[in-house]
Image 1 (cartoon, rainbow, N blue to C red):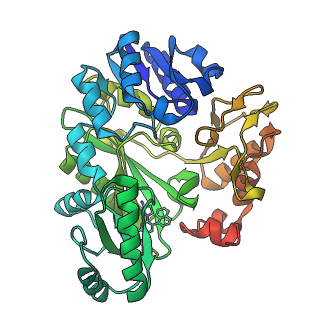
Image 2: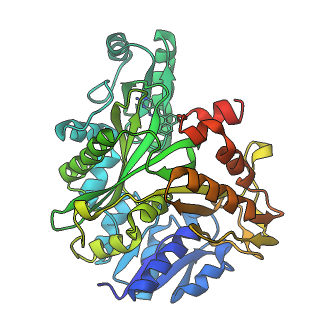
Amino acid sequence: MFSKILIANRGEIALRIIRACREMGVQTAVVYSTADKDAAYLKLADQAICIGDAPPAESYLNIPHIISAAEIADVQAIHPGYGFLAENDQFAEICRSCKIEFIGPPVSAMAAVGDKVACKKLAKKAKVPTVPGSDGAIEDEKTALKLAAEIGYPVIIKAAAGGGGRGMRVAHNDVSLRAGLKQAQAEAENAFKDSTVYIEKYVEYGRHVEVQILADNHGNAVHLWERDCSMQRRHQKLVEESPSPVLKQDVREKLCESAVRLVKAAGYTNAGTVEFLVDKKQNFYILEVNARIQVEHPVTEQVTGIDLIKQQIRIAAGEPLPFKQKDIPQNGCAIECRINAEDPARNFAPSPGLIEEFRAPGGPGVRLDSHAYAGYRIPPNYDSMIGKLIVHRPTRALAIAAMRRALSEFHIAPVKTTIPLHLQIMDNQFFQSGDVDTGFVERALLGK
Ligand code: MV4
């Protein structure tokens, strides 16, 4: 096992990784920008190293600064958390060429799943269902129009280098397809320096269901069941839960097994997530693979009893998975609400600044993953998520009741948060019955 690792991230996920390391007897060095210099979690690490100014490009995205910090701290491995450099295969390659283990998948697997066209090809080979569409990149208008005529409108244009909803366009007819193709290609070139796009049938009223996987360097790969993340706004997830409230058990098993087939085919190891779209008839189609630990990993930890961060570190250190597929339960129901410092009344404008009052919820079945506290100043430079409230109860109805109770205990002032929106979601009859899709929040709750 490693004796010391570097955490190349900030906020709640840096704190979460420190906690796992403490329990494992692994020392930690954490990096921070000048904007984070007073954050209390820095004191929980064995060492904290300033790597630059507030803009991410000068600190959390600055590879030379991070590698220098790793050399100074004399660590054997780097945990990238999520966001920032977590899915940057060049960064993973640089770490390893510096003889520092990158706690994540092999570079080849990151590259294979990072290119959505390559990933879809791999999925087909592994007999994982894909949405009907172009088998590869779409170069010209003529091919696009011919394909749309075959599969029928609506269609969706996606960037091969995209992901998480960036660079997508829906087209309902030839006119909007012509315009959308040009826009999507220009946007992709601009955002990713790669104008490659592909086209799929647009699946309406889909749910977002994703499968957590773990794979070691000894040929073992398992799934840890699914998370349902259909409650989201503008591709930002608001609520995640496990199990999915709607999946039939036979569909659940097929979906989870197909995720394992894909990661095996990709030679993928460590932790990852395979995202699926599930339609009204419970047909499922792979969307993409997220080659990192995700924000919503705690709901999986609660239902399986498995610490995903510890498993990531063990796998990176070369240890085999300590359990088999049949030993991984999906117990009860876990729900997570992302608490953002945003003002729902002002179109979710960020609400940074000093937290003067902070009363955290607690009690049976409640977990709070947060680096915030009374006296913490939220910097304006980063993501507005200040914590995640997670409940775990024997049934979904009990979990919703516990979440409602915990949210009503949670008091943060004077910064505005998404807590009132979450209370509204917990009270919503469609959420309660599980009858939602990825468009629900904007359509039914925010009246868009
Ligand atoms: C789709 C789709 C409908 N049909 N693909 C959005 C994020 C990216 N992972 C892919 N996404 C979608 N792909 C087809 N063929 C609808 C979405 C989508 C979506 C997916 C998951 C979660 C939220 C979403 C919100 C809008 C659209």
